[in-house]
Amino acid sequence: MMKNMSLRNKFAVKKTPPRRSLSLNNLNNLESSIREEHYGLNYDAPKIKIAGQEFKFDDENGMWTSEAGGSGVGQKEFLKMKKQNQGLQEENNLLKLKIELLLDMLAECTAEKHLLEKDLGEVSSYRGSRKK
Image (cartoon, rainbow, N blue to C red; front, side):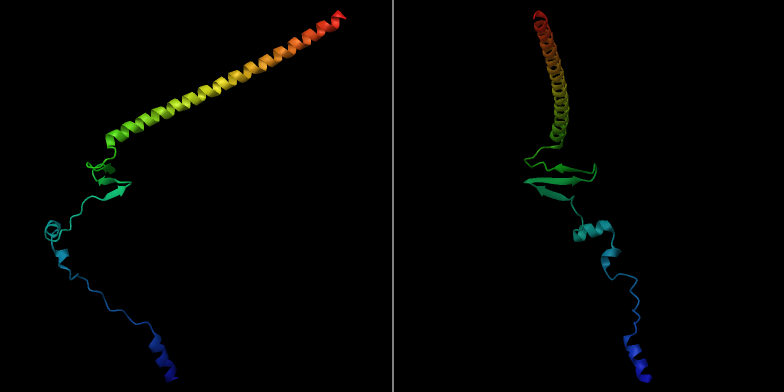
């Protein structure tokens, strides 16, 4: 029985020692401005390069902007092109509507023509049968 107790103690979960409450790192004791100055911990805004054009995140307005030296389109040009694109889409929708209207009118005229030809054929066949 003594042997069985020693096995239990061997596999029992041990208590972990308590963690240290204070960090030994002296960076936590310094003010943020001093840390930035001495250790270079200030970070620039995030940048990304897509298709040869570099963009930078602007924290003030929360938008990605093109770098000044880039060969890409600036934000003003982008907004202008976006507005022009929207205008062209509206014009395209209007033209599609006009085409649908013209096709409906053509179908109506074609149907009327066929009805008139049918009526004309019946009248001519009626006249032909009366002459006999």
